[in-house]
Image (cartoon, rainbow, N blue to C red):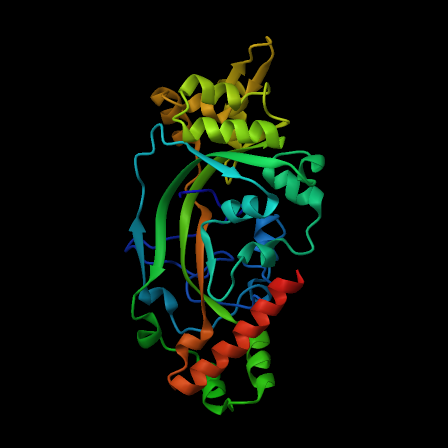
Length: 332
């Protein structure tokens, strides 16, 4: 299932030889991230609260990490490729929303991302009113995702890359059985490192339903719902709330949508629907031209323990980290 994941715009400068120029933003290949204390690499950026001091968010752990990274062109022809995803509850909505983000050892990374964020702030990111985030509502997401570049480390990155000498020394001095040595290391250098990320853009619309109409829509899709029936079920005739059509990184898209995706309902009112792109290649071409190609729409964080050469010590570090990550997820 190709679904949407959202983070605010982060501009990254690329070298002409195709390698990543760093550091140029809060997402840089090979940098350390502490997901236990401050998941700012995504959380702060997501809500537009980016510190001007990079070291407060990520840690420099590798000597010239960009030398061991490659840029892959992943642009595809997404004309008429709209995704409709059903979410029976709010947890599912978050799962879909952060689908492109993976954190090793974390079952639900979005719990780390959304902690301490108000319901109002979260509802703004979904483009629906606060009241739509209550109990009992069900959701449908219409999305148009366009990845452009994938920046990733080489497959043997942990063998090739050279850790900073101070970090290598701490790994050597780490004693198995002393948990504080692991947690202190994580606080100073990070629990994970950025293994890869994807740049591009996603345009999406969240629609909120009462259970009876959600179930009606779901059954219709299972029975090969016609395009006209799908359009009707996505209209205000059946939805409780029509979410805004939002873009991950382009204000120009949102302005364009308000003018070009207006649909007239059977009751004579107009509303904005992302589904209006369906089978309209001319509109798809226009929206693609406006979409951003420098927003983070995917990210993979791997554990720092992969740099530890000794298997027993590596296992110990991973077990301690896993316990802390699971405990944090349970308590959020």
